[in-house]
Length: 78
Image (cartoon, rainbow, N blue to C red):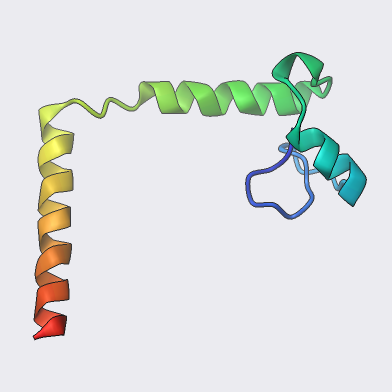
């Protein structure tokens, strides 16, 4: 599985040639044979599933962050 940063590495950190990297980007999960890559992919999926974006506290935090960024932009523009 290709790493997300695009530096021709596999997800588990092994180097890949340009040809291997291009091939990896088109692979289906059923075609992946590296157990470390599969385990890392499973761990990443589980982390994403653990995040609950619908909780009220997280939503309030994100709204406050966005509002503060907007205020900083408005202050910079004026």
